[in-house]
Image 1: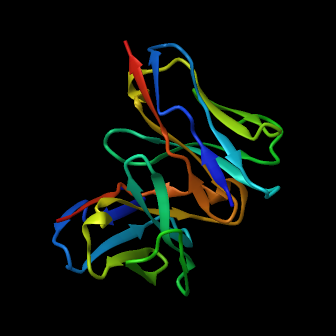
Image 2: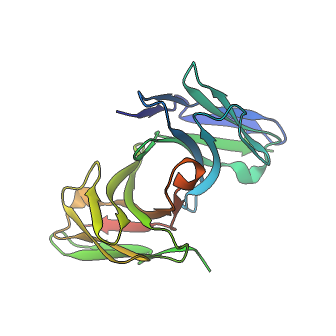
Length: 111
Length: 115
């Protein structure tokens, strides 16, 4: 069975600083996808970034990058130059035949 | 216009009532999903459908049923609502066929309160 672990219930970061949100996963499948979603206080789930298990390069999308360490089974999200609007819950998820979510990390960006 | 819409956005109902949550999408995706979100538990899969004739149970299907009326429409029913079904419900869609095409796109959610 697949599992996602997000060990940081909450994180604080100052505006314009970078922050790393941790995600470790467990799966016996060789082919899988890793996703990060953002959930602002308004409640919607916003797709941020995707990393395939066979991708050799770390994924990047604007200020978001994914630090993928396959041997360690980790897929940490790095947000560069944090903005106040980045304050939200962040969920890591793994897909093999279903999408399994972690319990999330609440990020708060302060001025 | 939003690609994935859910109605209603908020609903208060009483224990024992039957309610239906509806989801429509204009993304042209074949795959549709229903999740619920409880505080501290992330999202959990209730049901999913890979095409109009395909319905599958997810992790927590007890107490729920679904109907896939068309490629673009997928509804979730609570036959007899109970208070522990109070949650935020999400519909999602994906194109499928591997890799980044498995990305799921979510509707805005329905907040359900069962009294």
